[in-house]
Length: 325
Image (cartoon, rainbow, N blue to C red; front, side, top):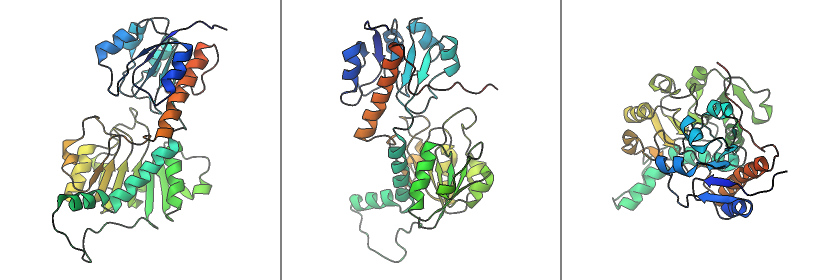
C-alpha cells in the first residue's frame, strides 16, 4: 500500500488535535483561520493536492476540481450536509466525497430542543428585557408563552437528527408526527406517525424543520405552507434554506406564529433583516454541532476518511450520489 506523504488542503482551523493527526502522516496546506478562505485563495491552495478537508462555506464544483487537478482523490466535508458539494462533478472526475454523519446528531438535537424551549417560553425576549434595565413586574398576563408538555410536535425531516429530536420530545409527553418523502419502516418506539406535509402542518402547534437542503426542499416551507400551521404555533429551523425566512418573519409580524427560532441561516453569515427585527425570533449563529466533543469527533471522522482513502482503504462515511432524475 502507498506510504509516501501526500499534500492535503485543510480549509479551516480545526478542533484541537485534529490537524496534528493529519500532519503526522501527510503534508498540510492549512488555512489556519476561523474564517472561510477567499475563493481565489482556495482555488490556488487546492492545486496539486491529493485530499481536501472542506467546510460548508467552501464551494466544491467543477472549477474547484479543475484547479485541484487529477491527483485529487477525496473531498472530506466537515459537515453532515453536502449542499456545497457538486457530487455529480466529483463522481465524473473519480473524486470520492465523504461527510460526517452520526457524530453531530445528539448535539444538534439538544440545540433544537433548547431553541424550542427558548422560543416557546420567550426566553430570549425575557432576557433582553431584564438586561435592558426597563422596569418590569410580574403579572398573570406577563410574557406568556406556550406549554411544551403534551403539545403536538411536527418534525419535517425524520433522519438521524429528527429521530433524536423525537426521542427528546417523548420526555415532554408530546404527540409526534413527521414528514419524509417516504414513511420510515418503523417509528413505533418513538410513537411517531407519518403524515402528508400539509396535514402535518395543520396539526402541529410546534414544528421542527430538520430535513437537509436540496433542490426539492429549498423554500419548501413558504408563506402558503406556514399559513397552514395553527395560530400561535412555534417554528424551529435547524437547516438552511428550507424555510422561507421572509415568510417566517411576516407570520411573526402578523401574530400568526407565537415565536420562531433559526440556527442555520439561508445566507449566513448574513441574517435575514426582517427576522432581526422580530422580538419573538430566537436567532443563533449555527450552533447545532458547537460542542467541543462534537467538533473534535467531526474533525476526526473527516480525518479518518482521508487517511483511509490515501492508504488505499474504503472511506468510512462515503456520500451517495444524488438519485437520477
